[in-house]
Length: 86
Image 1: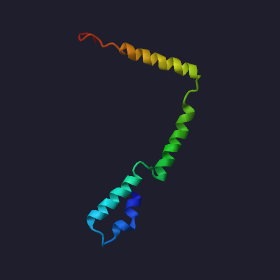
Image 2: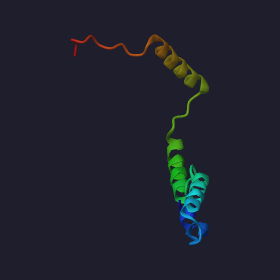
Image 3: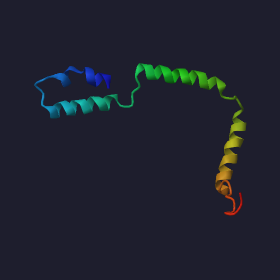
Image 4: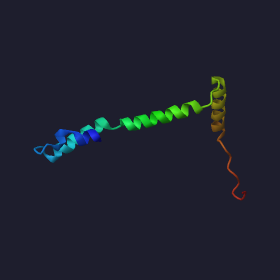
């Protein structure tokens, strides 16, 4: 958005408003999905703090867990209680 605000073409007094809007939309489209430098640094900092906390385990252990989840999904997951039980 900062690039849109700073773009000299948008502030040109001789441009029709429709042209200004078209150019602003084009610039916005170019910028959408991009992070600002501050956002990028914040997310990288979070990544650097979180990754070391993840438990290390063998690929075979992860594969066993994934297979257990798949089997549970095939069985329908948790069974709901009868309507009168609590």
